[in-house]
Image (cartoon, rainbow, N blue to C red; front, side):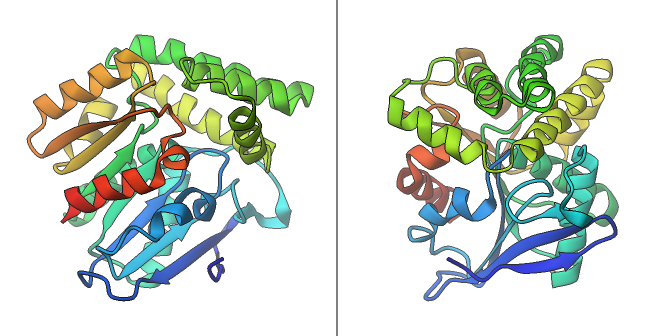
Length: 286
């Protein structure tokens, strides 16, 4: 367990961990952003023993997840713009300027959005490693919008019926339809995502809302991707073929982008192969 600190903001209180890595190979820094519904430490702690590139690692909890709450411990709707802005405030609080970013799922979209904002406003681009980032599941934005509606069903099921288990099942069937449904693995995933089910549901909607905006204006996504000049994409071997195909196309289209598929994994890849992923990350960032 790492020490958790809190940054009071206008509407929220942001939890984060700032970790110093002994005997690191560089004096660099890395921001790690987690996915919907699962706290930062739970996502990345299993990798930390195998990552010695950076001296400093920053692991926040995005609002609605982990220990980050709206004031009064309330759950409320979220947006990608809000989540990015809150991380930017944390970076300013810590006086962080030069750093790499690792993002998983929702955190991958926030990482891309944050990078684009910093690039356009401050001229600061960051190297990104993204594990199945939300909003890049398909090349065709219309198809992507249709896929995201399954997640809308999941979030509405959680909030409107209170059936958290069914809502999470809808989410898993959408995000990892080809997963190996081992009972222990399914139960573990359910347990992870059920920790703050309302926050999880609002996080899903934040991505779906963003995708709906993109479906009406494809330039939003294109411009965001154009601002990222060094990106390492990781996908699960069991994830949808169209997702992996899109990553291959992005790696071909953008100089400085690379795609690696992780064998035996689905969308839950950071939980399934943390040591292997740490190895890939260390090699790419070196």
